[in-house]
View (cartoon, rainbow, N blue to C red):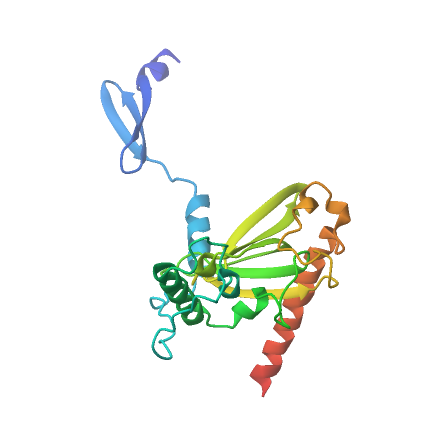
Length: 244
């Protein structure tokens, strides 16, 4: 037994090296021995999954070409007519020029007629309190589609910088996402269910739903079911188109 013990090399220490890869070091009889350790592939699998979800890179966004010379608003046209906030210097030429440029930018960046969804008086206008689905891409070089559905909480009219706030609940916690309406990263805004006319009393916000979610005419709990039903309908329509 004693001779057997003497034949076993003495291990004097263990260590680890964190250079390019994880390595374990053991000192046996004064000689260091290194061994590579296979790292967990969880992160690699997640990265590969993200790459699979991402589509082909998109070309740089290009707005629609101008349809003619820039039209300058006259002095009698108020900022509200161009979906711009009130301005005491609205009649000055420089301010009218900026509003005209802003209106032209909105027209050229509106590739799917989404302006009609947020223009007061439009027959397609969405009233705050409605349930909408917003789809966007993470980037144009690696375009993964991201979607969020919820109640349209408010609309902030700032011309080409106009934005909407969508609210929903995730695991009982209120979550709000702000989307720039004319951002090229926002690929689609779809109405899942409209609220009855007059719910917002003609205003641009129903922020009181933050404190009183039960006052929402359309239940937050029904949003997930609406999204599932919408996805199933679109899948069937896609299959029908492929069969034709």
